[in-house]
Amino acid sequence: MTGRNVEQKTHKVFLALGTNLGDRLNHLEEAQKRLSPGVSILSASPVYETPPWGYSYQPAFLNQVLEVETELAPLDLLDYVKDIEKQLGRVRSFRNGPRLIDIDILFYDDLLLKEHGLAIPHPRLHERAFVLVPLHDIAPNLRHPNFGKTVREMLEEVDRVGIELVDMKGAASEE
Image (cartoon, rainbow, N blue to C red):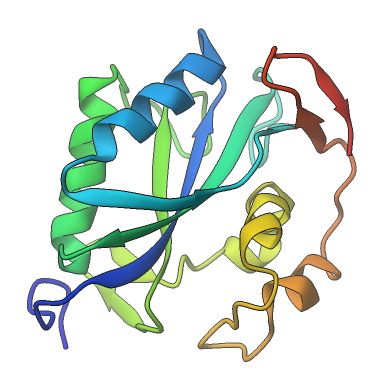
């Protein structure tokens, strides 16, 4: 199975959304709205404010994970979400730099894939509390097909310092 040739059926996918520029809550909401019609949202985690990762001299992020369904093949889904990022004004700068919106594919069914700039599962999700905390809220028992660990088990192995639950009025509160 390749990234473009996947059996035509509905696939369960987990997407990570992140933003640290402008009206962050609005960017998350707009990204969700634009996922339709190619992607249907099944569940959404709460939103978390998280410290920057990789490059620390930038504003804090808002992060969220969505459980979705789609009939798009993995590479078509990647093109679809990257197009949404462009529609919302994302301009790529440098790795781990500030961004208006970022949409990453975390899991696609139990697929293992590495081709054409796409790796599924996301290759660094097990290191990133800003992904694991919201993912744990909606899928704590989801098992990583490479490592065999659940999201709960992976979350126990990362530092969660600085991750705060956001109320929908925009104020952050300690997790």
